Amino acid sequence: MSNRRTKHFLSDHSQELALILIIVVVGALVQLRTGGSFLTGSNLNELMRETSILIMVSCGMMMVIVSGGIDLSVGSVMGLAGMIAALALRDHRTIPIPMLFLIAISVGAVCGIFTGFVVAKLRIFPLIGTLGTCDVLRGVIYLFSKGVWVSQADMTDEFLMISTGEFLGVNYLIWFALIIVIFAYILMGHTRYGRHVYAVGNSEANAKISGINTERTKYIAYIINGMIAGLAGMLWICKYANAQGTTATGYELNVIASVVLGGVSISGGYGSVTGVVLGALLFGMVSNILPLIQVSPFWQRAIRGAIILVSVVINALVARRAARRALERRA
Image (tube, rainbow, N blue to C red):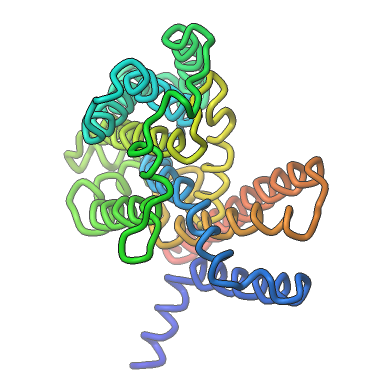
């Protein structure tokens, strides 16, 4: 009985276990390559801080992809939410910090409603629909900012402290990431809505027959994703101490790579929050390692692109294998 349970556990968590193994091996190799300067407390803390925003947005993207969609506009949502929050702070320096959080999350929610309407209500193919909203929202950023940056001088020390301060010795950004991970874990794994998301992504037709409101399920996924991206956008502005029209441009590619690397099926219906967190950590780890071992910036981009390509190919192969097994079981 114990052997059977062990086999089931290894089968169900093979992706997560493989990622943990890869992270450990890569970390050990880089530790040897850098003479012991990689696995230090300060560098690991910085790695977690650098990866925290990626983890947050990846959790939101996971919900959308598991539901059978995709969102290429998250970078623009982050940029717009961050810009509006930064402009509010610049023009009203006494504005309470919680109000800035509310503004950023609200902007993200509005963007999610708009994107959800395009994809779920108008039934436009997600890749095309969100590509269009990406450009629309990027244009809106320039309309609000009028092409002007919001610099560090326009921000208060209290605002900037959000990305540099610590609680119990842990950076605030890491705490935000942890809260989002716990929220996503509970929502996707322990609620009725989470089960509906998996069902819709696995087979929208069967989900409808089962009485699931597929349109509403997808709509909510895009709204939650937008809210998380809005929050992440404000934290991004805190972290880099400036807001500009190009903020987080192309960031959606890093997010999608982390999600797919974490074992989420790009066609929907399968994936875990644990895998997404590990995928984001591995992707962030690679981004941290490349400058450390003095890889050319041009090669860094090529390597990250190769990681995205390889992760998508592996994801497709795993999906085909799972489909083949399902057919064999039916036979």
